[in-house]
Length: 206
Image 1 (cartoon, helix red, strand yellow):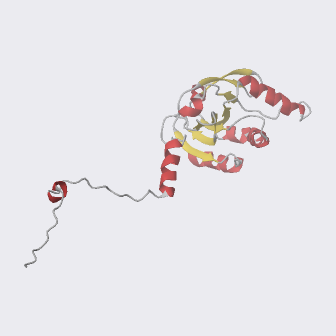
Image 2: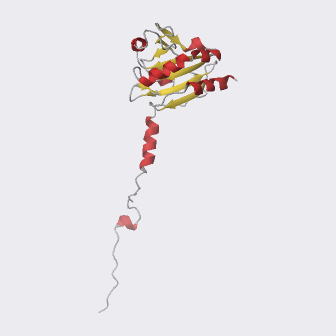
Image 3: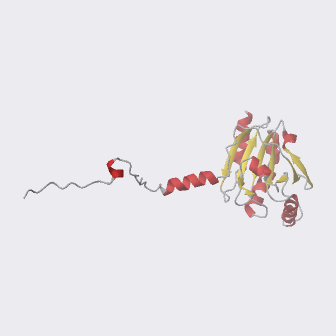
């Protein structure tokens, strides 16, 4: 008895090459995913070379009184704009006091120093009053401190932490034509060097 050759019949979809193929992909590297999320969540915008966003906002002025500060008032001068997360932190007081102590040196090279946080002007005022009481009633901050309660200024300058609702620690140098020439964003635990800032301004003026 002859033994015939056994042929297995393939399903029609396989025979015609129409079967759906399942694509197996390796999971994306965790580091890459983290970098993508970090970039998407980053509140910081590269501002160097751009015109500084105009603002007019309430502030505690250099004489300790509550008033308003407009960036347009500083046209024709360099401006060091210091953003910080909030009042009542020891590092913030130390930074602003150190810059205040050397305002004359900045003024000598045609530069003004302005500080800004998302605290209200009344919070700024009360904070400075507390600092004065610890200094035997003498003022220790001689530069305008702007209130950015609406977060518009911090957001416009690309330094707003949207999750925290406050500015990050940042410094920008704006030239007499209101162009941003330097932008430095640092960790909240990092103090700023007055010497280095003054050197940057001096380099831009030469």
